[in-house]
Length: 392
Image 1 (cartoon, one colour):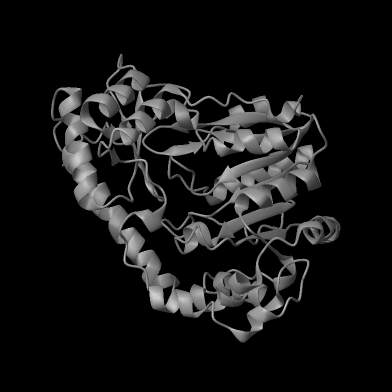
Image 2 (cartoon, helix red, strand yellow):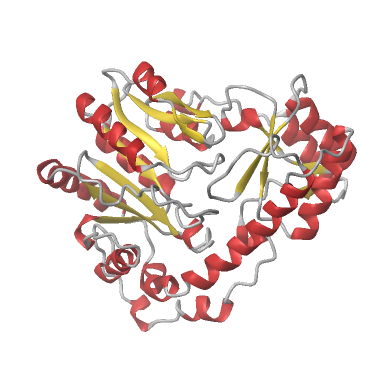
């Protein structure tokens, strides 16, 4: 059987994944410092309140709505109103995940062979999404100089006549860097000149490690056609409750046309299940407590890293759930990750997994339990051969 070229991926596990599966098969306990699923990190969710919201009589009625139930979209609009952003329910589309939303937007904006521009470093999921939509991927660099920022020369060098959208992840995964107001202004100028849409993935937006007045959401950007994403996977740490949202903003005429076309796409799939939509308003009321619980965990583990790594080794992070450790020059990051797995039973990501242009880096999730995280970091330091001085 000949399958579609778009699925012609390398399907055999990579070496690191193979080592991990072998260790699990042998019953070895591995300290997983890549775990990004908060439901597997021993966090104390308000289980009774979350589950009771699913027990509603309205769940027995199927009343499909192209954009999603109005009451659910109004709950999303209220969430943004709490953040002092004016978003209308008519601008909002609900999907089962941001991955699905990306596919809807790629279908809306680009024809086969055209390209989407992504930041580098960024999450590797994007590679599969462009392949599945018969598109080409392009990258623009983020550069680091005490903090991460958009390399606008890199944007100009990599955007071209076939670029239909530029994606930002705000804050970025894994760099944790937010887009600033001045950066958005430049992106608007570049994209308007190229008739290129902006897509802002803001699933981690609420998880700021520091307060900055110049951080900006794209949700009310009016200068250019813009699609802003959020969802329960990160906003409430509930990846199993499949619901995300996309906000369409920008100049009125092009927004109207985009919404009309996107409605047809959304109506074709109608993917979000009714119980989750009906529960959304109640769940969003639980947001402050859940987000505090997650941020407390992130800060505890971040503090652990600052005690054990020198400041120049621990790259500055503004938000999100990840940390980046810069290793000494000359270390082969892939060999180190393999060695940590085989000899120390500690699982971390190498930098190349996130499209870092240089090496060596280790990428660690800040979600594991503090006991697991601390022991894993201790083993990493021991494997590196020395304990670096703590930052002051």
